[in-house]
Amino acid sequence: MNIRGIASIYKFEMARMRRTLGQSLISPVISTVLYFIVFGSAIGSRISDIDGVNYGAFIVPGLMMLTMLSQSTGNASFGIYFPRFSGTIYEILSAPLSSLEIVLGYVGAAATKAMIIGIVVLATAGFFVPLEIQHPFIMMFFLVMTCITFSLLGFIIGIWADGFEKLQIIPLLVITPLTFLGGSFYSINMLPDFWQKVSLLNPVVYLVSGFRWSFYEHSDVSIMTSVTMIMVFMLVCLAIIGVIFKTGYRLKN
Amino acid sequence: MSKQTQPAQAAISVSNLNKTYENGFKALDDVSLEVKSGEIFALLGPNGAGKTTLISTICGIVRPSNGSIKVNGFDNAKDYRKARQCVGLVPQELTTDAFETVWRAVNFSRGLFGKKPNDAYLEQLLKDLSLWDKRDSQIRRLSGGMKRRVLIAKALSHEPEVLFLDEPTAGVDVELRKSMWALVGKLRERGVTIVLTTHYIEEAEEMADRIGIISHGKVILTEDKTKLMKKLGKKELVLELQSPLKKLPKGMGKLDLRLEDDGNRIVYTYESAKEENGVASLLDSLRDEGIRCKDFNTRESSLEDIFVTLVKEK
Ligand SMILES: Nc1ncnc2c1ncn2[C@@H]1O[C@H](COP(=O)(O)OP(=O)(O)OP(=O)(O)O)[C@@H](O)[C@H]1O
Ligand SMILES: [Mg+2]
Image (cartoon, rainbow over all chains, first blue to last red; front, side, top):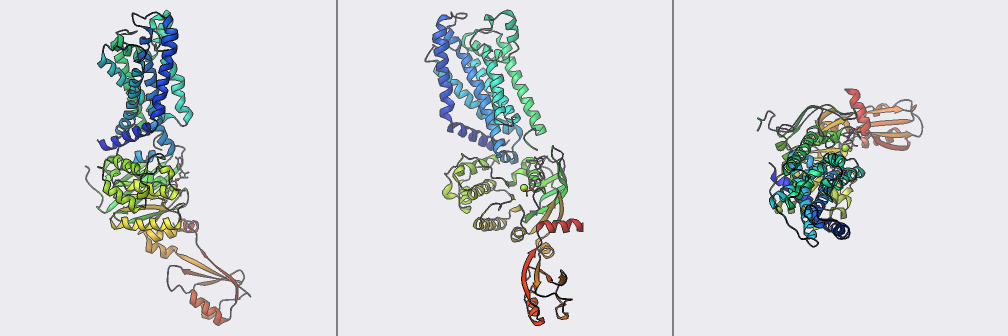
């Protein structure tokens, strides 16, 4: 195992993120504040508690998910796309690194950043609502697994994309809508029967539900279902990446 | 570790290598090539000949369609870690991480290859490349020539035994070209094997021990430089005469001369590399014979001409 090689990629990516730390932190913090003003205070004050959880507190796990999903995919996809675009990827490809090591470096860094930002969002939320986390270990499990899985997804997008537009399109057209419709701001139970069923096709529902359970023991689907689903997503992403490296798809001519 | 089957002195051994790109273009056609350890090998060929493709394939950036590649005896597919460990690559294009500083960039490269940090080595390397003053500058603030040196520093950062230089002197001024040649000399003393590509015969002549000529994806020949230069280093001196000659005077028969353009032109072919190339005695005999010329020029066979001749010879 070329540990130093992995560490080099990881450090390089973290340094890149540090250069843009201001933007990286400010925008999630601002949007969190906005969500709390709009949903927490303005609208939330007219919404009754959901299963005994105050509405402002209820949306915290969903808000964190929203931020972490977009951060993980965004960071990881850009991280691998940019060297492909600029040509500096030659160095990574010619180094004595296995594909797994390359993934560990890029995905590790993207996931780390997403986790940091997730926690910053949590801390920001702490200014608006009292926080309670009933199962901190499970909460950390979901946080880590989500960031890693969606960084893997971002990595795949970054390899698939052949232009900056494509880099944006999946987060914009797929991930954001799925998160909004995934119960970040409401409980699936509040939907009509039909839409509840449709929602179960949305993978983000399982993440938000499990994550929220770790906070308030309130969930739309059973916690074990959520745990299973996140592991399945991760395996699917790993399998796709395996195929990419095996075939050299878009990495090597 | 697989047993070394190649003779120990082969730094690179390529056999029956083919590469067909996705669009169906065949860029390498059954290439076989050996580069000895410690030698400087120049790969000479026109645009699109397949030089970059060959180098990229050896370095693991392009996947071969079939064939085998060994670096220091290590198969570049099966033993890729050991094979790549030995290799440094300076690409043709100036691709750098614009926002990194020089110092961080060379440390990054060294780390990628799994080497322990070694500040003293990297400091010396940057000094050798006149980049030490610029170590804390972002790469985007450097000139093109400096960027190229950064790429060289990155390629050498992990102390490779084999260095690939893909057109190291393209778009580089005379001074930098000279210093590049000096660097190559220094590396050779350290025993580094160097493979460089170029369009220029003079450059190959200046630096290489052996020369390989590649055209349309085929290695047409590999030869010791001195032998090849004898073959290729021909020049022609063309003399436009004031009045036409019926035939060449007897006294001038020793030289390799011919009459062209109905006797209006004498063409002398000689080896430019030789001290005693006969131009002086030609001029003497012109005066002795009372032949006057109104104009003259010399021409060298271009690389293209040479390829054409070589391909025809085959
Ligand atoms: N990714 C690619 N897909 C398809 N064809 C390619 C690709 N890369 C290179 N080629 C083709 O392969 C041939 C060899 O290209 P290569 O870059 O190896 O040439 P070269 O000898 O390095 O030329 P130059 O002296 O201009 O650098 C060219 O005809 C080129 O168009
Ligand atoms: Mg080239």
